[in-house]
Length: 250
Image (cartoon, rainbow, N blue to C red):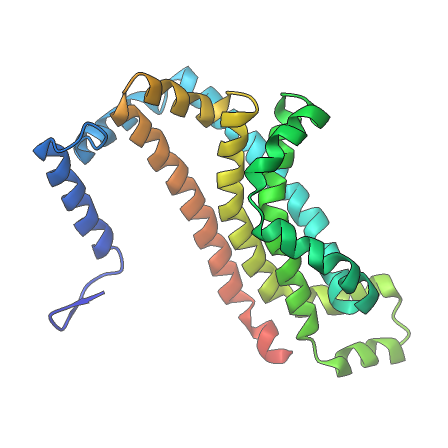
C-alpha cells in the first residue's frame, strides 16, 4: 500500500482498519461493534476454555472432512471432464448450476436424507467447496499441451499412469487455485451447516453469543474463524507460487 508516495508494509491496511474499529467501538455508535481491544481481551479469556476447544474441534472435524471429500472427488472428476468431451458435456451444466445456485436451500434436503448429525454438516461443507475445485481442475487439464499427452501414449502409458504423471501435474497450478477458493467457500459451508442442521461447534457459539448480545464474544470467535481461513488460504497461495513453473513448462 502506498500513501502520499510512501510505500507502507503489506499489513498496514489492517492496522488502519483496526484503529477505525477501536474508534467506532469507543464512540458507542452501536452495541454491535465493541472496541477491538475489548474483543481481543475476550478472545484471550475464552480461547483456552473447554467450551471453545470443544467447538473448535467439532468445527475443525467437519471442515476437514468436507474439504477432504471435495478434494478427493472434485479433482478426479475435473480431470476426467477436461480430458473426455462426453463426460464434460454431461456434467458441466450441473456443475455450473450447483456453483451458482444458493446451496443453503439444499440444507433441508440433506437433513431429510442424512439426519441432523455431523454427516450432514460434512456433506454441506463439501458441497460448498467441490464445484469450484472441479471447474479449476477441468480448466487446468484443458490448458495442457497436446504433445505431452501424445508423448505419454507413444511411450505406452496406461490411463492411470497418464492421470498421475501428466494430467495431475500439468494442471496442478489451477487445481491448487481451485482448492484455495474451495477452502474459503467451505468455511461458509461449515458454519451454515452448524447453524441450520445441528447447533454445534462455532455455530453454537455464534447462536449463544448473538442471542445473549455478547458481541465481544461473538466477534472474538469470528476473528478466530477468519484467521484460520486466511492462514489456510495463504498457505495454499504459497504452494501455488511454488508450483507456478508447471504452468510455464506446459
